[in-house]
Image (tube, rainbow, N blue to C red; front, side, top):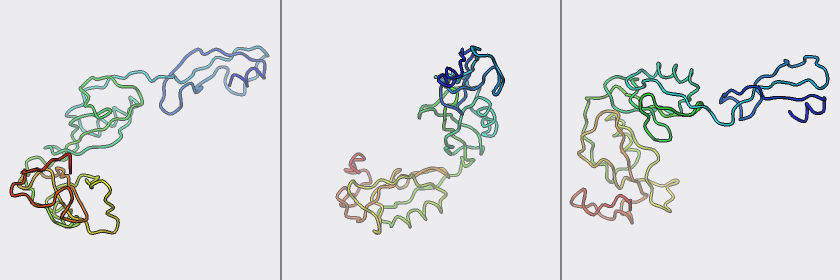
Length: 219
């Protein structure tokens, strides 16, 4: 911009700044005189530019509001929703928590304008309980089918031993979290460790006790 104005014998002054996440920092947002105006040589052009750093905006009361309500508020504040995270709760679509960089935000917290947040939303399934079955030794597709039948969700990505290539292989469950017999609510999440053989280098034998000699950092 500066070289363009110098070439035409014009000068400039930044008279104002605003912020919008739609454009990079220091982008020219507005000008006076307006584009294509005829001006005398040496005229000063007044510019409005996009700020280098976004201003902070204060969130309203966010808990126990509907996701539709929060979407409208965030759009007005130029806050983006990165993803929705379901969590068992009594009322479907009710906002339970807002997370920014994986940290929960309290009501009336301040974050940068244009920031992206994750929203934890109630799935309406609170109060419905199931017992988690023992999935050890099951093929992965069968274990996944059983979990779906119980209205439970499988955490992605799955835990795979280092160096193991599962491409085109039969895959088996070698460990699970929570443990078998745990009472879960509908819609909760289950984490599975898998291998291409049940006789895994990490988990060679089924222990007599489900908790015996199982080190989670080794699985």
